[in-house]
Image 1 (cartoon, helix red, strand yellow):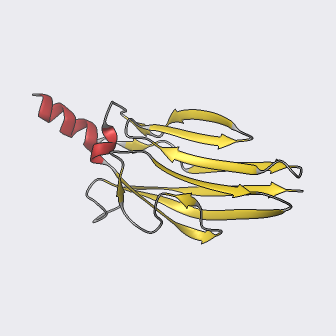
Image 2 (cartoon, rainbow, N blue to C red):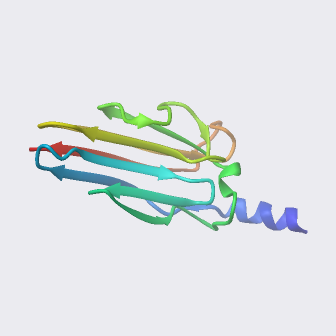
Length: 136
C-alpha cells in the first residue's frame, strides 16, 4: 500500500520553480556572495545579501524526496563553486552553487537546472538559474 502511494506521488511530482535567481551588489571592501541550494527534503534556499530565503522546490514534498530525484546544472559564465556542473547528481544530499566577488568587479552565471527521476535518462522538468555578484 505504501509503495503504491509513493509511486503515485512520484508520478505526480512537479517542480515548482521555473526560474531561480540570486543577485548581490556590494560596495568594496564588502564581498558580494550569492548561492542556491537544493536539499534532500525538497527545500530550495536562495541566499543574496547574506540573507537566506527558503521555499519548496517540488510537490508533493516529503522527507527524503531527493533520494528519488537527480539534478543537473548546465550553463555559461563564471563557473560557480560547489556541486559539479553538467553532471547528473542525486538529490539525496544537498547540492549547491555559489558565486563570490571580492574586490571591484562582477561575476555572473546563467544556466538551466534539469530534473530527472531516472538518473538522467529522461528529464521531466527544467528551471532557469541566474547568479550575479557585483562589487563597486
